[in-house]
Image (cartoon, rainbow, N blue to C red; front, side):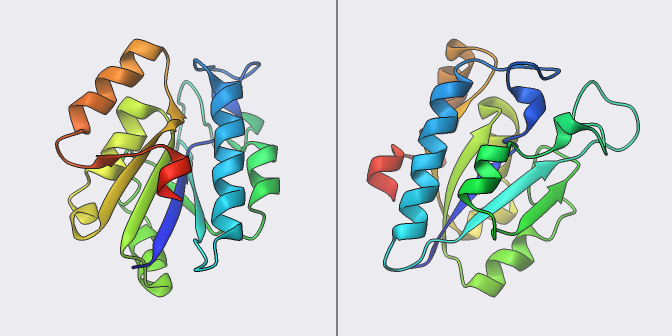
Length: 170
């Protein structure tokens, strides 16, 4: 069993001052930093993979070449050598090199966290490609526009993937 921590869309536009700030970002940022630290300290070695959404053309946020599309500096500092998979769609596997990156690392288990719970997090977790992995979403390391939408999204995927706090999963 080889786990990998997928950190999805921890980008500046989702934080205060960005174009689409989300709910509870300070807490989630701290939780993900702790999760990355645990992954880095794990004796078996849990690789971290950044997944970054970059919009092509005009979009409301994450526009290519803008500061808002950049990965949050604290997340980059926590995992500076982690590969970055760039995507254009909610599903982190769609038209990206994520599957190839996981194969090179021999990954069998995905620990999924990031932003937004009901969109990119769940779409990646329940992707057709993700079906060959043991997938766990870390609810304490995810957020979206509101707590209620976060909880609805987690409940919706609970029949397809495991939900475990990062303190248990890592």
